[in-house]
Amino acid sequence: SSRMKFFTYANWSYQVGVCLSRSSTLCVPILNMTCLWILPILQVGNLLFFTILAASNTSSWPPYIILPLCFFVGLLGGAVYVHGYSRIRKDMMPNKELTEFALASITVADAFGVSLANILGLFVQ
Image (cartoon, rainbow, N blue to C red):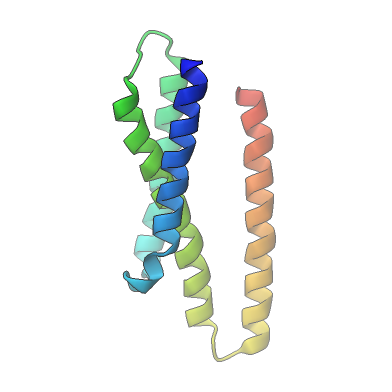
């Protein structure tokens, strides 16, 4: 019961982070390419951290430390998503056909990435 309660709060923390970061283009200008590449690198760091945390049965971290990390994961994921789309739209705006192709390509790649992550997540769990 406490585990389900934690996963509920962790999911809410993640979703709030995603919602805030996807709304960030109104407050934060479109990121340059260097900043945009740093965000996925941080996501890989989070993946490694949470993998090590899950693999080590010796340490038990309290939820008040893990929940802000879940929020941070949501912030990163939403920021990469929204700023990636915004960057494509900004960079390719003069060429409408190329813009439509780029947005369609990234949409397919995003769906493929999410599907692959969910399948791999089943094996990890």
